[in-house]
Amino acid sequence: MKHYSPDRQPSIFRSLDWLTIIIYLCLLTFGWISVCGASYTYGDTDIFSLSTRSGMQIVWIGTSICLGFVIIMMDDRFYDTFAYVIYGILLLLLFATIFNPHSIKGSRSWLVLGPLRLQPAEFAKFATALAIAKFMSVYGFTMRNWKHFAGACGIIFLPILCIIGQSETGSALVYLSFFLMFYREGMPGSILFTGVAMIVYFVVGIKFENVMLLNTPTSVGKFSVLLLVQIFTAGMMWAYAPNRKKTIRLLLITLLLTAASLAISRYITPFDIVWAQLLLSAMMIGTLIYNALNSRFKGYLYIALFALGSIAFFYSADYMLNQVMQPHQRVRINVLLGLDEDLAGAGYNVHQSEIAIGSGGLQGKGFLNGTQTKLKFVPEQDTDFIFCTVGEEEGFLGSATVLLLFLALILRLMYLAERQSFKFGRVYGYCVAGIFLFHVFINVGMVLGLTPVIGIPLPFFSYGGSSLWGFTLLLFIFLRIDAGRNLIRQ
Image (cartoon, rainbow, N blue to C red; front, side, top):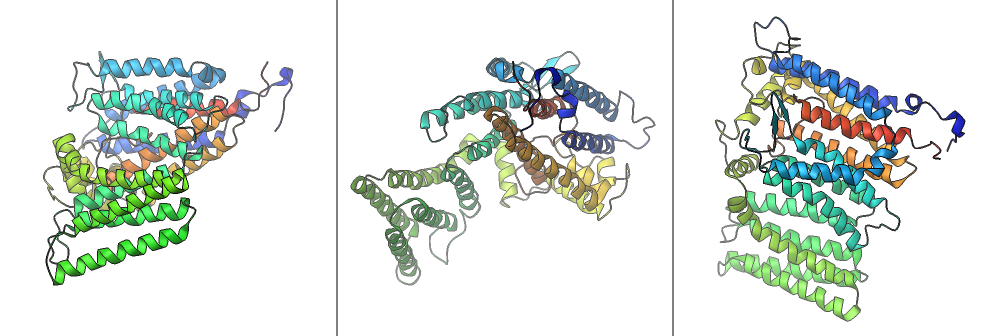
């Protein structure tokens, strides 16, 4: 590490990571071109007018750059010192927004201040990241301590609850990206695996619930999920339990009895194999609990809880879909899973977006020459679905360039996070990288019909001041922390 005397501290501008700033400026430029293309109407003569969205986006870009400059000029210790204060203020603002009388498209997540509309959930991301970084940088913190882990989760779930109260589920889901940082900081891989397994259970169970297995009265969805629970449980025993011979024996017995039940149901007496699978799962859980009590190895108990929780989650998935989720959310998931077509309703946005992207071909139709976007076939084409404009006007090459820029930004953020001298900077850096990764993956995925339509913006591309300022705050606070990593403190 290079040290400097107090009299010869390096210039803050020399310490900045200019590569990240260049990527940021490139994304802003591509973003403005995309907003211009998405909001342009045939016959417009001035794309720079403040009466147009492309003109207003220039204002948001200019103010964002000024905001980034202000952040850079501040002392990096400010963010560490006042992390909890900033988090508390944003949390109160989120809570107050729940009672906001202004409802925009069914959501109460916007504060209307005259001509200005702000979305506190966008700013709460950097505040939550600062609070978590502050909490986890305390001496003695470890992810293996369940109290510490629960405290960190609490910091995340408080803004999630407030945002859900605003009927803005999409923005709330973004906060789950912090668990990627948890994994880097020592969270057991089994927790991350459990989250992935829950998604698999939900998708498989719901998609194939009404499909029957080999002419038996057994749902393919239920059969597949319970089989996955048994296989995943055996896999965790293989990874964490000390006796692998027991694992192999238990899995073989389970699979053989499942196969025997299937044969009996098909060729002798038709019955629902799910009941046999539930008995086998109960046998597996009972064996794990017995081994935990006999060997005093807590790992068996945790694996048993995983199996039991998996089954409980699966049987509550249908209730969540039909009773908890809003009708528009339920329809979107059904369309995504192929259960409903609805090209004129919930699937209209995605269908038109796919047409726009496909029509762009390799090189695209050129700036302001996209027909699908100019004729306004794609709703929200300058906000949530702006990537379809990139695909139509810039083609595959332009879309690939944009995705490579985002990949370069995320990888660079991870590199900067790893070189931090203090845990606060590293944790915050991984929070920023995780948020950008989640936004890009989900937004591009929903435009391509690969992920549910949950209404989150594409960083630096989607029109609007709140998201642009929020992402700028996230990024430049980290750049300022990184720039001060080698300074000698007095």
